[in-house]
Amino acid sequence: PFRKGGVDWLAVGGVAAATAGAALFDEKIREKIGVPGREDYNRDVWDIPTFYGDGVGVLAAGAGIYLAGLALGEDEVRTTGRLVVQGLLSGAIATYSIRVINGRSRPFTGDGSGRFGWFETSHAHQSFPSGHATAAFALSTVLAERIGTVWSRIGFYSLATWTAVSRVRND
Image 1 (spheres, rainbow, N blue to C red):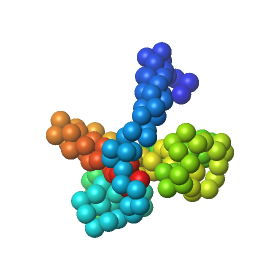
Image 2: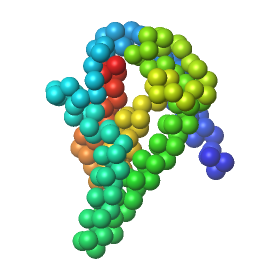
Image 3: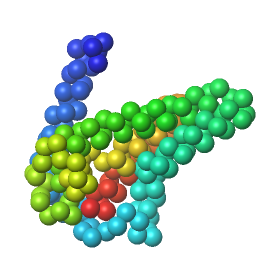
Image 4: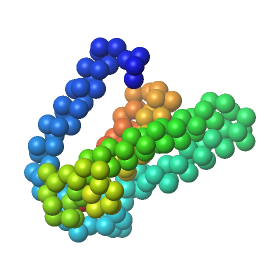
């Protein structure tokens, strides 16, 4: 972070401001999209993005890609697998650090979106940021950028966004 320039910090500030601004609409978004009482897997189309953002699945995908590259002697494929694992792990560290620090209540607690229990470690108070969305965006970013086409970016980032929306839908 110490090598970042002014434009980089401006972008970070913009993302932070947009996140804080979006938080003002949490309850309205939840009312429109969320379905209270849903489980992670409901045998419907929303299971696809939930599965795509599963951290263990993304880790297995990264390891599988790495091993395939190793077996085939393809350094680019092996590197892609390593990048998926690295992206997932760095995202997970950031996600869980932020979760513990802000302790935001999960929707099922009924505490409301404004309830924060700073340095909370219980599962019920670790809803933000989404681990599924983090895993999905880690995988999508690596695959979209390694493939490097407009269509790969549209497809993979759309799938990751669908994962984030599914987390709200599944309440």
